[in-house]
Image (cartoon, rainbow, N blue to C red; front, side, top):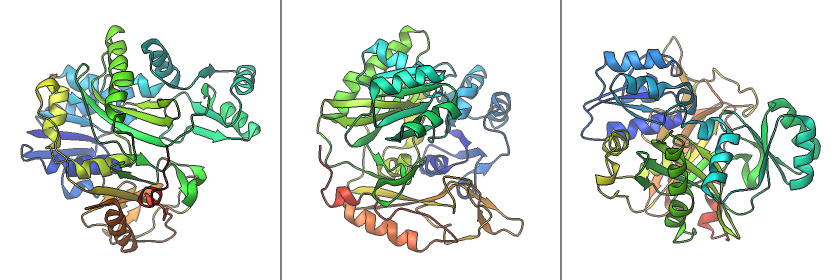
Length: 413
């Protein structure tokens, strides 16, 4: 199988590692990729959000499968352009990707499908924002309606901060706060059949103890030994299947990766958000434990053959990833710092680049996702932080408490 992967972040490096390990893949290319992806794939300098350029590259490479990693190319219609060339593509259409592209659209779908979620208001004006904040109360949850790279959400007790974020965004969705541990569930789907992956938990705040600003994610781990045993089948029945049915009813079936962000509330699991692609950094830990060949699974979803696909196989044990971020992230990150020790197995590249002299340098906010597995979560955690200690990046930021609560048994439902 000849596979083309679209994207350049940590999620895409994790996907590239998984695709390259599939025995059915005899050629792997990525556009535009990054230095880590270059270790396992042929890179092409094509803009990921240019549907015509991506489709043309897929034709040029005689790709059998295109895998679209990030959300922006999906919302731009890259999957539609690829499929128009007769090439299988893992990723939803632009119309279906509005489940992530518009928070208001996603809420409308959830309401129509009867999906358990927070009460919410879509607001475009200050008076609407004020009424919504008055009704729902603190903590205030204010979400940018459009794409914001995982950083468009403010959760705060500060009324002025909530109003300021709403004003900065323009159109927002304001929701009631959902209490309880958060869980990410990835579901591979061809629009009808749905295959859940292993649930994971990520850490959004910058600093230990869930302090500091919201980020795109500072670490993740799996499996969740503390989660209810019926979590996955319940979410499939109450959320995934009704959502897929509603999308089919609207004439925009969702085929690709449905990311279900959940809060395990006292009233059961409720949806915080949908995404239209693999999450970062949860992908790093989920794929590290997946034994089923990845390309075959994604191709089955892309070709409508998922119902006949064999049951997934998983490794025993656990996986953890720790994000190493640049100085000043999540503000304007400092870039251009030399990175040492990052070109080894387990170190996933997200914001890296090559200098003219060949040195590996930082080129973004979240620079690396350091990932390790072990027979249990404690050993995986020790291995991950040992690997973190071997990486050198001036001004690096990372949390020291990823998965610590789970290891110590402190997560309570």
